[in-house]
Each structure stands twice: as C-alpha cells, then as structure tokens.
Length: 210
Image 1 (tube, helix red, strand yellow):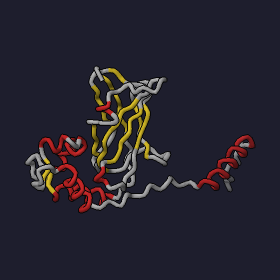
Image 2 (cartoon, helix red, strand yellow):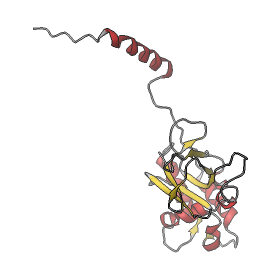
Image 3 (tube, helix red, strand yellow):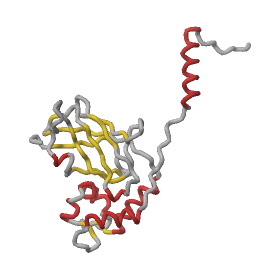
Image 4 (cartoon, one colour):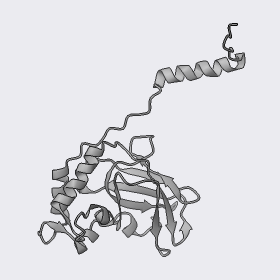
C-alpha cells in the first residue's frame, strides 16, 4: 500500500507561502560577523606606550589602575603571576583573540546601584585606544530588572567583540542632566575585558551614592 504525505491544510498555505517569500528575499542564514583584524604586536606596544609611565616595559600597580579593563583581566593574562603585564603577555592575549576567530560573543549584564537594579540606563563598552580602532563599541539599555543585552554598533545581532573596553553608564533626566557621576561615564573608572572565556552574564555594581 502506498502512503501519500498529508497535504497541508488550506489555512496553512498562505502563511507558508509568505514565509518562503521572506526567506527568499532575506536569505535563511544568520548575519555574518567578521572577525576583527587583530594586530597582536602593535596592540601590545600601544598599550605599553599609553600606560607604562616609568618605561620599564611592564604594567603594574597604578599603571594598571589607569586601565580598568587590563586590571580586571590581570589574573587571566599574567602568565608568570608576578602581578605585572609585559609585552609578551599582552601580545599572547591578542594572539589568542586573533586565533580564536570569533566575530562576536553573546554578552549580557545586570546593572545594580547598591543592591537595587537600575532600569532605563544605557551601558556602553567603548574600545580602549590600544585596540587601534579595529573593534566596535557595543551598548545596551537596562530593563526593569537591570538586565541588558549588548549589541555591536550597526548590528542587530546580540553580542560584543573580543577586546578591552572602557565601560560607560549613563542615564539622562528629561532636562538632559546626567544622573550618574562622571567617574562612571565621561571619565569612567569602569572597564571590561572580553575574552574567549567570557560567558553568560556579569554584574555591574555601582555604589549606592552614585
């Protein structure tokens, strides 16, 4: 006995036809996110040029505090565990970015002030100058629970590119006045390093008096 496949109900034919037309016009594959053309040697040298104030070829102490994203990533990048970053360690980090061939990582965060979520704030990840303009800014807006999803400028795909960023938190009053202190936006002391091991959601904690 020959079993014939069931024909779709007439009510289903129109939606299926419309879906087929849309897929035909837009394509059914996900948008392509190009891997940034990382330059390990140049990036490492640029970081030292910017922050190595005593010119000893390493970043430590107050020098790292001047770059919050590198200070945060120190435990991961510091291969010999001397609490300093040298040219080789920085270059290895950027080589890992390049060889990982990741165009973008899904990245989410939660913003809290004290222990309370902050709604309606914009959080931007602005690439550090030593990223040489090769990665793009990402940003997101917090919901009622303080949660946000980052998106790269010019892309509808959630995520952020591997790199080191200055993090800016902003929320404007109707008058245009900024609600957060300058140390969290225009002169931010916040930073974030995004590497191959960055996964899930991280929390941005601001003091209650911010």
